[in-house]
Length: 71
Image (cartoon, rainbow, N blue to C red; front, side, top):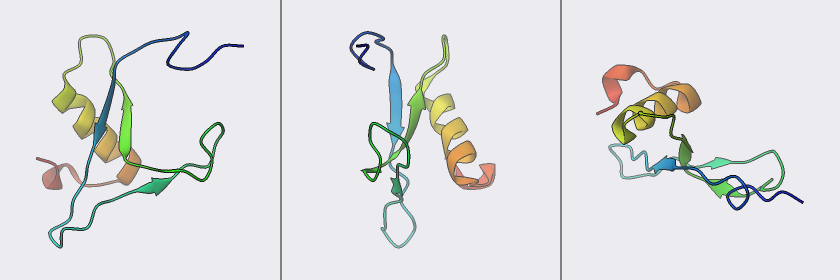
């Protein structure tokens, strides 16, 4: 059976989003194989995409943060 990350290696980017109050944004996964696990925002890195670009993209896509809040 295929195992993600083993049979299909790739590069990923995870980021910690911290508010002015010091709290960290986490989300709970709903799909298998990690259902109910808490995680940080992240994604695979597209070819030739910088880690800064993927971090901004995922922060905007997954959290709906306005670009003006992302540094």
